[in-house]
Length: 483
Image (cartoon, rainbow, N blue to C red):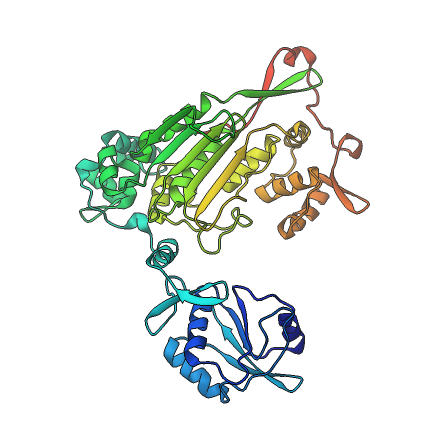
């Protein structure tokens, strides 16, 4: 591992931080101090530690005589830490610098030195607390929690919830036989009972209130209605601590009670759009239940406002998943639970369902689903129900009438960004050529625009009679399919 002069100068211009440390260490630096710093640095995501450079910014190179044999030092460090830390000897204007390239630790494998697990407090190593260690294993354990056996018995499961699952699964292709199976055989075929042991997935989906209170009290969903964003008690609240299948439909019905219509006109046609799209809301709730971290304390919260829904679920995104790649990447935290929801026909695949929400938002002239307030400890999804862009609704409806090629989620994201003159990311830019070829998008100067009537694309509904539509409301929105 060799550092180029340009890279070294760039390091000197960087402030000291969680992943970059500097120490003068002119004459000596104790091995213990260095090993502890390496362990802490690895546990914070890895980085570089430079010996022979002043801590104060801008950093000056003072040189170091510590650890005269880098190879022996590296071997000793590897032996004590049990991990390899490359040590590079670098000379800057004849002054010696040691650069330690500390890799990030692996999942659920914090580094320690002589049995002491460390983290960085500012730029100094300090011992991890028991809560720090617990958080690491809770957040990063890659095993499927929902597939684990629990202490619940068959009698702890709700017959109502099992019947709901049985009816839905029996409607799937080549699954009519499940309607006649015994409860135990049904759940075994669904892999919700393994041997004679009830899985946590079965408890989450079918458990009675008493069973969940006894074995997994955190598996609850709390609904709140708030008429404003002001703090204080909610105007309406319901706590659902029972099997998911006992309340999934009831939760939507509760939301739909306050789900009003928004209208706009185009010539003599009046259009109506529900504030909250049923398919999107159901997908958002399914995501929260399916992808939350059941090892962490905390409940799922569904907060309803007059024009907005916020859904909070404990635990951050899985490793490798961000708010930017949710449409393309799927990595369920609870695979057995996701598979069971797919068997019930509630999700098409064990994925994120974000594409459903994106498509509905764009086609209904609303803003895109927002995950920006998510953290490593929890995911927050905001669905904004306000009608923002009626023109985009009409544009997309006209494309359907004109028999244009099917638009995929990334096409719709691109159209949304162009309509709002927003930045196009790399994926969006890759979709632009096809949209140009199909005449949906045009280039004027250096900016892309949606094609309109003067560009050969008619916006609105052609060839309709005034008497056919006058006095009626054309509904816009996706119909949720109970298959």
